[in-house]
Image 1 (cartoon, rainbow, N blue to C red):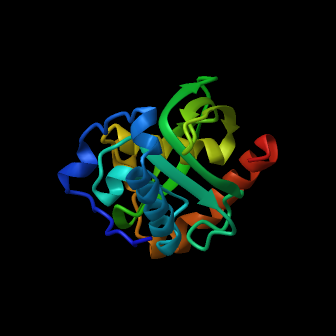
Image 2 (cartoon, helix red, strand yellow):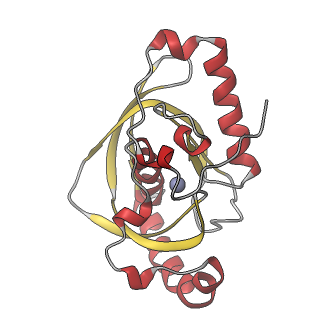
Image 3 (tube, rainbow, N blue to C red):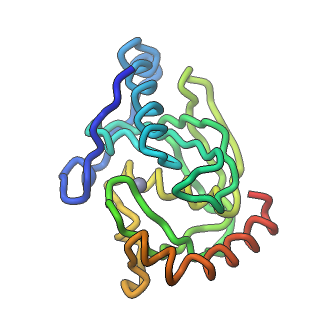
Length: 191
Ligand code: ZN
């Protein structure tokens, strides 16, 4: 496995639409090795998720995992999940205000509205079809990562640019209120 470099905001690879993979391509050893690199790079950077274009390969694969994450201590755990060609379908119009950060947008956070409930259809890394429903903060993480596959960053979703904050100022001025909201959301949805 190899740690990959992470693209940062301004690089065109983050702004293009990533392409779908066929099952055959997915099962090839080089694609499987790429997925191992994506996971290892996500772990090394303490990311809650990482999308393939963030490591300069514009294909529709995302990895997510949250296990007592020091970048996001209030996030409920997400088991290691790899989604290929994911499609998200909101199950409600209801949104919540998610304070997001991104490994491709160093030292900046901001509030992005995200749907509270989604249906997810995708392939797993072995080419099996996955269908699941995700809710709450976890649904926010899924939407953030899938946006990367369409060339979108959380910055594009921020409605009020006055919410933008460095990580230090997020902790100093915004974290307590957000954790209160996030805790209520997690209590409601269990995720
Ligand atoms: Zn991101």
